[in-house]
Length: 184
Image (cartoon, rainbow, N blue to C red; front, side, top):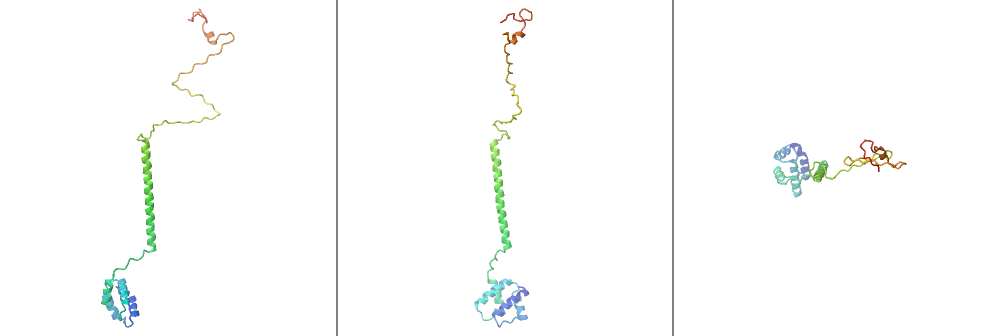
């Protein structure tokens, strides 16, 4: 206990014990004997002594022994600011949980995508289908498949003489042009 911590203790002793003298010599003796004891412990020890109903003020050694024999005081209640800090830390704990869940879901989605692709480097076995839409004002020519043979030209209708146009183009029989020489 320091000398500046003595006055509150002395006032309590004067109030409880009317014959207690708080002069310079008394203060010096009490402060010297209680120098290595915490002032709060001296206060608690004095409170215990006051409850006993003593007739005279306790000597410095009795006050010292009582202060040292007392168990330490209970921890004070958490101040409001520290309580808010703890709440903020708990809030950060929830943020951590949410981040962990989000990461877990992302990893799960990645695993499902890899399993669905079955390691084929992004290529799928299903055929792709491309749909194009043509505008009604522009008709398109039919597409021709190069693997199919070209369609033959349609035959022309016979003229009024009864001969087909292909007969007229054939050379006449016996003219030496290599025709069969027979007419149908």
